[in-house]
Length: 277
Image (cartoon, rainbow, N blue to C red):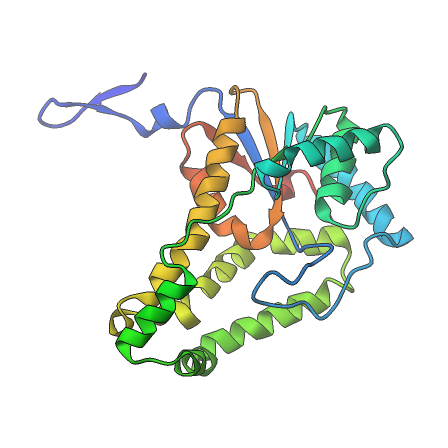
């Protein structure tokens, strides 16, 4: 341990004590959902045929490049309750009796795990805990004398909400003409992640003190879900020699990266270290 003394002679711990030594490595691959189920606020208009021959070649190239990270474990956006089903499907895929579905868990997670000879992929998603449930929100609005229509108008009138809708529509379109690696590198770039996080700070988030902080309180569920996901990654980390790849919707990246960068037990790696256009 490195020890330093301040002017008054007190002993202090240097920052190097929290960054040196062996630490488990984390690599996040933020993706658009290959087989989108329409669960997010933005509903995609365009689809990528991920099983088309050209896209399959791109996926194989992506698999080969991700293998450079040499992950010891692959984590995916599925809840732990789904682990037995994942195990069964992955075993069937390895045994040649299951054809991969269109989602990224299969197309990237299963494909890469088999390529590396890993025994399984790990489910680390979690259900969010909400600060207020639907009926509580409605009761709060009633007590404040505010209608849902009035709230929706405030969201629609927010110029930043409109700008984010334009960004989502642009990205939705570009994924159909860019190569898979190009688009994923863009989605995982620091600037796009930073900009994307701002979407959670506009629109309904600004239902502030005049509405008893209804917006920030409602947003806590999103942060809670990501905190729980990171907790599952901590549980998955068995030793400093682990190298864990998480495949997850790109919207999760801002919070997960913040946690990973602050974790004394982990070293965050960047996608661009291993994947090139």
